[in-house]
Length: 438
Image (tube, rainbow, N blue to C red):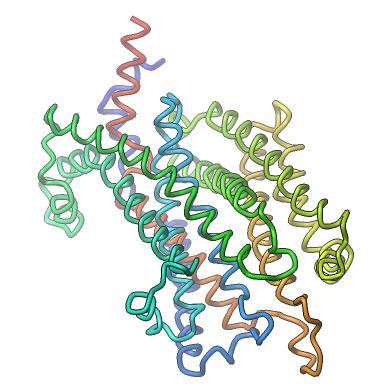
């Protein structure tokens, strides 16, 4: 079977394709969401944070929920690219570039959404001028920037052999893309010395990104855990955030796998085997995250300290109960029930489970932020009724949706310009399999 996959056929199958009608409509929709988000941000810059639904108590709203979500899903880059590569997982090849572009787009918008949340973006310079290492926010800025740089390099270095192929494919054309390919990788000659250095650099980056990835999620959790509020005063938050990030990252990858497989007819490269194995990984990660959720809620529920009681009641049976149980069911319990069966690990059920994981994870991040802020240790008194509730304004929804659309737009445009499944690695992998069979 592998003998029919000649280098010419693999290259032809995996070359980026121009947008068809559906692709153009999809891109136009994403651009429209981004433009509406930019208009909403213009209004926020002009009129201040008063256009949002945030008040003195809920000063972190949907923006920080989005930030935590983006940081979480970005962990997939270190899971698929780094961990799987270091463990020499042979079936990872079609998934590495998908996971890495998800990681890069997510971490870019995590950084952007933090600036949006500041209200006055010029104040970001104060972190540079007056930054203090005692502040967890300063740690977050450092690890996010470091993680972004390493993720970009992990995206770029394995891409170099494919850029050489793209240069060869567009050599006779005088287009912007042909010039762009040459600018990115004209120096790459595919010489043994270059390949050896590149492989060493990729291995070093894979080793480096794992502790950095753990650091970014741990530091993000510390932004909450070091803030003295009911529901956040927990030593469990680091592991709780990391396990949730692994889960939503894996869910995001299977969603992207399915969409690219259908859109570009990649059934021969992203096979049922990949969905079956990613389904098993999601079951493991969902079970692990469910354990940390039980650990996070059962202990304070058993003690039921007065300061925690109001917060927990709002989650379990109060105003946020529907959202809370929806998030628990869709992000963990139902995906486990689907994927634990052999039938459930077929491509479509895995895709559905992945969508549920991603949607449930977003609501889970919203629940980490908002209910806690509405239940401070000192009860609210002598304040307007609007301070006791939080609902995002249309500007907040527009900016949040615009940021999600922006991340998907980066992924969409990347797939139009570069091969979403590595060509050179796939050719090498098929060649190696063929020789083993011989």
